[in-house]
Image (cartoon, rainbow, N blue to C red; front, side, top):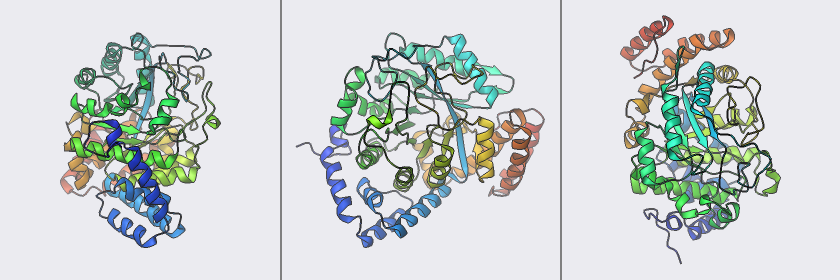
Length: 473
């Protein structure tokens, strides 16, 4: 029998199947135990998080009144930690060459219908200029796993190119990296290249299911993949992002595994995940989501997000353009704090005027432009933020977490969000978006707690109006 141990460095001990099965059984036995549910909700109100077992009880509970309480609490916790800010980013696909055989991804090696493409550094520069011209400041770079076509040197060259491009008032100020599990040495190189967060989705924590879904290629090694975040931390990357691909396996199993992974990072490194992503399986080139019989409803998807927000209150939560505007609206309310906008999931998609579909990793359900997404968010009362200050000021890892958990991060984030939004309005926004944004900024300045900070923000907003850029707290 393999023993459960959150402090272990072995995948099967910190993501322990027996513990997850026991957790699901416990949740089933107690989902109608409203006295226990109340106790867990009361504990969650302390804003210090919940264990995977406690959170699994809340996810299993179907009592309508309690579910509403869970949603209300998730909404409040999200406001307490992240205010009404929504951080904006875009994915940038560098290459779809891949040696893996993943059954849910069109980049798998056996797919002969998808054209293979890898951006040259000149093409990377064109993509970056196109993204800057939209108004983006933060990217998540993506590439298939292929040691020949996409070695770490290629990724490092791309990062260097991205940071080097300054076009008009545009600049990419933070590059997050979503590439395959690699070595401590390579993570060290990524850290030295100045990356923000290292992101790696587990896809599924169920070992048997994982091995079935990854029949060939380096990604088929469950332990090596699952232990990647520990190697990243060892390599000096202290901001890591985790996630599963909901729909591949049973969602309650994935939910428990995801939280156990967060608990493991906290137990071993003293820093939980900087972000948790919640993508769902979507249609793509030769992939049909109905091939996987674990799809979940929009309602359950939103409930999962609410329970993650309660269980890991400090984490940033990410939703992509895989989801429709309707689902994105609801899930933002319940916990999501970062969203992509104007995304293209094909290699070299931004430099093309028409959205290309031939090299897409998945179908995009929210096809709105960045300006339209920003407009929509502001109308809903949110501040779209293009801020990258924490990473650039060294507020990462445990330094970021202590500020976030104490609520002090708001003192930086709120003014930074307003100043970066002002930049977007001046440089990229349509007249309607600009009008709504100016009104929102004026209103939100009053929500800055310290008078001195308020005065500095007002001064800097005038300077931005006059052409200066890149102020931050």
